[in-house]
Image (cartoon, rainbow, N blue to C red; front, side):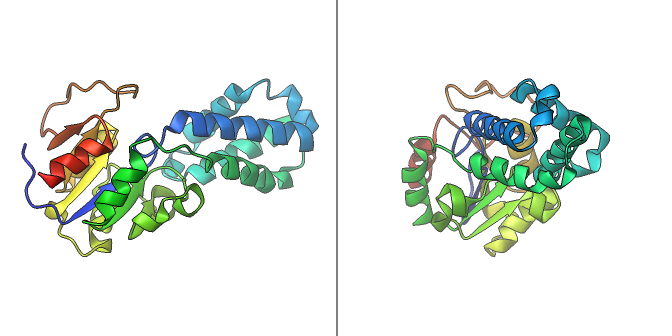
Length: 235
């Protein structure tokens, strides 16, 4: 597929602008340390950050209606850990705050900020994320006209509604919106299904192969970094 007119761009955040794994690992380690200090009986429940991930998955399994709300899932799993340990459930909010603050400590990919500067000078940009990163804390918010997260919007990618809301936020018809992201299902298939154009970002050390293995419509662009997006749009 070839790009047609692009009037605005939406971008995923985690694993598109920065690597998600190190950020969440740091946040879970911070959460574990906080709990062991302030709710010491959790030591009998939480042997490692991996247990925190298991509890979150367990909580999501019992509450699939919260799949779009990362805050609710993490807070629920913290409450579960406190209850299992016989600790004070009122500590959950402060524990989550410690986790959330650490989760915002991201390290942008080397190409990300220069690309955002170039793109934002030419196109209105909208952040569209299923995660709970806050651009005003991570940095980079000044490049974006708007930011939509599944938790606050109430619907997650790949649902069409969040893509349509991104286009509406910058007064752009969906067909003239280019969405850029790393996930072939949430970002690419979701954007295409919503009538947007799609660029698939496949970083060399990322979780996805650069070979498109899904049927149906293909991404308009396959990129190895965001500088290659700038070059494609400049040409």
